[in-house]
Length: 208
Ligand code: PRP
Ligand code: URA
Image 1: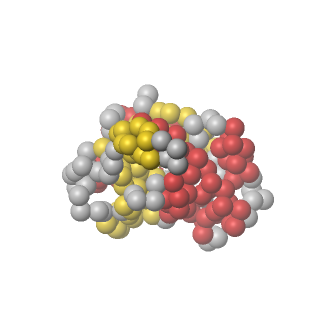
Image 2: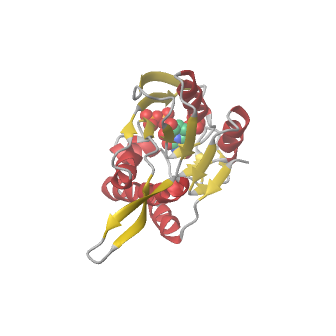
Image 3: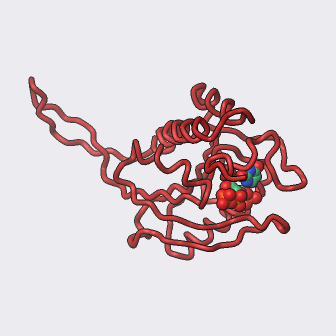
């Protein structure tokens, strides 16, 4: 399976607080932003570097800087928005696209309502973000949509994944590596991840 579980102790600790039903909106948002930043650190581990000459106060030295690979972040609305700021804090030059999808509560199938991407998608490396990978329908459709627009390089970053969602994305898009902080047990009859953290969008935005 193309999945990387980022089990850094800081991430695991913060994720446990996020899961807690007693964690309020403010703390939920702050922790999601912090975890997203820490996960982005891991996801960008393979960014190419190039050597440049820098003059320190003492000597000239050969140093590494980013080789300038173009990056893009695409949150799936709404809940993906909660992860954008944390990533932008460490990749401040990344362009941000948006895909609007909601899951029909009856069929659990994704319904698309918005898509806006940067112009130069073909050479840009995208991180598609959504805290919840449940049935995988939303992420798989978002990836299909990105590919239909000409996107070639996609990584999927979520916070909590269900095995069902991992399987679907792997089957439909074997080229996309999934990064997650946890793979939980199963989906309940309403398509919620168990143990999960509830409805991510509602917890981020205080709706319910
Ligand atoms: C949630 C979540 C994912 C989707 C995951 O969004 O943020 O996008 O469900 O479920 P899936 O893997 O079964 O497709 P939701 O549809 O609740 O919309 P919202 O973010 O606007 O609340
Ligand atoms: N969407 C959520 O926000 N939470 C889940 O557990 C499943 C889908």
